[in-house]
Image (cartoon, rainbow, N blue to C red; front, side, top):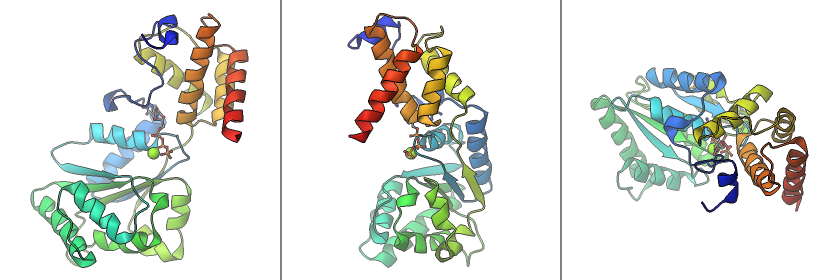
Amino acid sequence: MSQPYLAHFALKEPPFSKEIPDADLWLPSSKLAAVESLLDALDEHASVVLVGEPGVGKTCVLRALRHRIPAAGFRLTYCHNATLGRRDFYRQLCHAVGISPAATAGSLFYGLSRHVEERAAERIHPVFLLDEAHLMHQDTLDHLHILLNYAWDSRALLSLVLVGLPELRERLELRRNRSLYSRIHHRLEIAALTPEDTAEYLRMRLHRVGCDREVFASDAVVLFHEATLGAMRDLDRLAAHALRETARKKRKLVERDVAARVIEADSRERDR
Ligand SMILES: Nc1ncnc2c1ncn2[C@@H]1O[C@H](COP(=O)(O)OP(=O)(O)OP(=O)(O)O)[C@@H](O)[C@H]1O
Ligand SMILES: [Mg+2]
């Protein structure tokens, strides 16, 4: 085992890795509600905006959706390179759905619309998941509602799921984006973890890798929660550091002093 802390805590693999299978994702009631709202929205062929602070688990909610959605009726296409101009954005979407991108903007758009109509004829509902959508070019946002228009805007053949930081919703609320925003009927927010969630998340991550005993003292968990404000990516990083540090000290419990030191070192590192 390359990392001594794994042996020290008798862990089968690094507990706080992002490489967690879709089927093992942790779904407390708040996250389960988001996945179910997404499923309901897509079932009605509607579009969705999903926002939340960095690291609260938005992309993981999309992965949980991928795991649960009936494979036969839906075709999910995930795009995360949101920073492209409009033409390159559509070109990327063409690649992602598996059609060869045409040269002109008009043909690109036509190719994508045809793709959507063909899936509808096969009774498959296409869903474009646009992650990091707060970074989208205004040119692309200006045009996106047109991609939702089929049969004189009388058929819902495509769902868009726009995912991003809370400023995404602020952008969509701007008058300029009202044609798009008025077509997005489901507006979801992923909240940061509560203190109870933070404790449960740490336990779940350890349980997955074979450890069912209490490893984080409750006052250490409180410190982690305050430091991360309920963002799971930050929690992953701090918790992994704390396990290493505790193993170096040959202790079995991550205590408050170690948590405080790890948090301080992490914030010094980030200020540099
Ligand atoms: N449901 C979950 N189950 C297990 N781990 C999770 C879950 N949600 C988030 N995580 C952990 O937190 C990390 C950050 O989550 P995620 O990437 O989904 O956040 P995000 O909201 O998309 O952040 P960003 O805005 O920066 O893209 C993941 O890499 C994973 O380690
Ligand atoms: Mg993300």
